[in-house]
Image 1 (cartoon, one colour):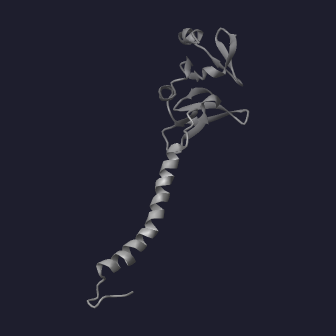
Image 2: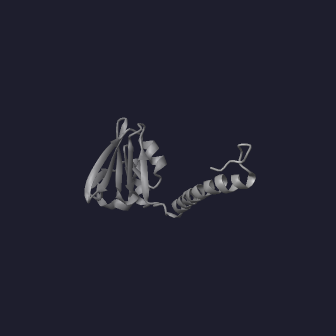
Length: 150
């Protein structure tokens, strides 16, 4: 590097050698970061995907809304029934039925221990049982009126 007699850069040398070279390196990096942030905003968010979180950090289930069939209470856990690769699958998550009902407001309660996804409703098996895709759920007297309105 060329130094002036006093050991410092002149203003013109400083601008051309230090600032200009630094700008040549930093400007492409800044452009890439800005383009990445902008492109992430352009990606559409799939709204039909739901995330069910439990009390534990690893209790997470991510499925499409159309795959969820129903939820059953199992003491301190809830058992979530869903379709995976055209087969009925279930997963236990530590949570309460009330929390699931608040988080997933499209579900309908059929019993004090059961929630269903109304899009999987097939038919009434008898007065106290409904048929859903791949399974059946009981219906209590208190919740029959809400099911008839569907």
